[in-house]
Length: 66
Image 1 (spheres, rainbow, N blue to C red):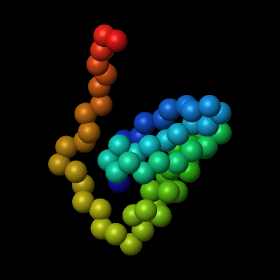
Image 2: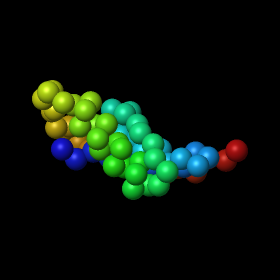
Image 3: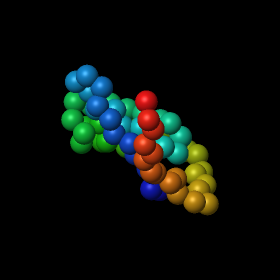
């Protein structure tokens, strides 16, 4: 199954968050955060049947005047 992941940095940690279900994990490096998220998602869906979404999430940016 293919998931969409957003990685951000908070202090000294990288946070990897799955867009489809909001499951998240962290690591000291981007690679570690993604590896930890992969393991977390495997445990999250263990024993469950996953239905493929009809359309993948649309990721974009917008500019807001503040």
